[in-house]
Length: 165
Image (cartoon, rainbow, N blue to C red; front, top):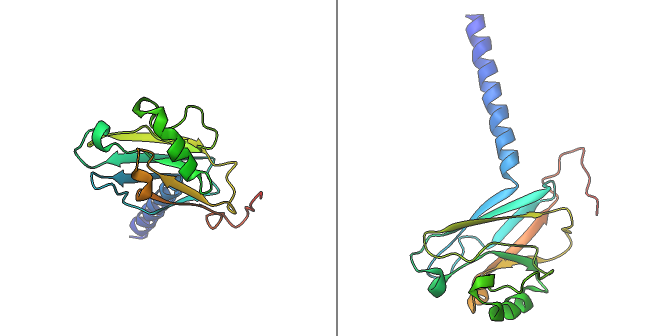
């Protein structure tokens, strides 16, 4: 009887630890959905400062092709967002409506159409919790309503960690 209780408790603790580690690992990624109504399903993405890299998966839940209602996910500082989107229009769909090699872009997915999915991974190391960041869709005209904030969070730090900034 005692052996069964011990084994049961050990298995419960192992499952709890595994789920805790999985949750911690998943803090460094997010899935964002976009649709044919020109909307993201979130207005804020939180990036824990404990991540080395952060991954964004964009899913287009609509049906229209990317030529008509394409969406991407682009991260810049808030100060640079509108200029990046405006200057990117002339770059065209083949360049995902972003100026090639634009240093102001921190992370960006490809432009996708309905039913498609794409992913981008970028470094978190140089992000500053005191800076204002944003994400948006750079498809021409979409930034007006398809945008949100990106928050770099130090609240995810473990007790023994301290921010470098």
